[in-house]
Every structure is written in C-alpha cells, then in structure tokens.
Image (tube, rainbow, N blue to C red):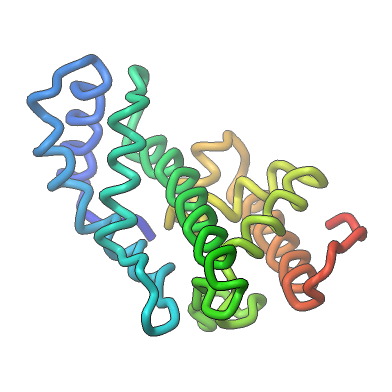
Length: 198
C-alpha cells in the first residue's frame, strides 16, 4: 500500500540513511519525499467526524516533530521508516482522542472511519482510543498479530513489506492479519475486554 516507484523508494532510503547519520541538510528533502505518502495514509485514517481538530496535516507535522526529537541513527530502508511512523501515528491519534474525550466527556471523541472494502471486519467510526486499547490488549495476547495490524493499517505496508520487515512468510502475515481482524472485530464490537485469545 506504500506508494511510489522503485527510484523514489531508493531515494527515500538514501535520504533516510543520510538523515540518520546526522546530515540535517536532507531533512527538508526527506519531508517532501515522504509527505504525499504519509498524507494519503493520514487521510485514510482520519476520516473523522465533522468538527474534529485533528487533520492529516497536523498528524503528519506532529509525527515529524516526534521523529526529529528522537532521531534514529540506524535507518535501514523506507519500510523501517514507515513501520516506525505507523507506531508514532497510532500513539498520536490515540492521545488526541483521549484528550478530546476527557475534555468533552466522550460527547464528540475523534473516531477513525475504516474503509469497509479494505477492512470489512471492523465497524465504521471506531474511536481511536478504543482501537488503541484493543491493540494493547491484543499485544498482550499475541504481539505479532498486534504488530501486523499496526504495520498494515497504520503504516500502510503491503503484505510483502510486512513479511520482510518481520522476517516471516507472506502466508504467515496473511494468517496473522486475518486472526487479528477477527479478534479486534469482536473486541471493538463488544466494547468490553475480550478474554478470548486470538
């Protein structure tokens, strides 16, 4: 699901390695190289209710602030970057939803609208904080399944990219992805802690 041709992908990897090595002069170029891809992902995840203050632009900018504050020095490639960014975006969305929920007592908490064609197991309009709680519960039961969801959903990585990143087969990723979606559908649908392991 990550976009761009092979040349662009190679350029991103080159920029990441330079940035990780401390070359601050490439930060603007790197931002421009990954911005459009991150914006597509952020827009996909943040089809929130009208009036939400979290926008794709804000989410991307906040993610880059986090990345700049804690720069990695061992970027291998663009897949690793998008995997790390997926974790950052997930945490930012959850934190934002929790703040709004606390401020409004849940009256207008931010929600994530899932693309039913791509993610039919999820209900539409799932609250970002509830999703994060469900993923934490899944992580305690099966860390691999939770990571697959994070990489596939929040990072937009393809099955092949997830398999390469985790060092497992594509068949394993597909199996874990299916099990995780089914478990999360039950967890989010019930609205209570699901004690059944995936």
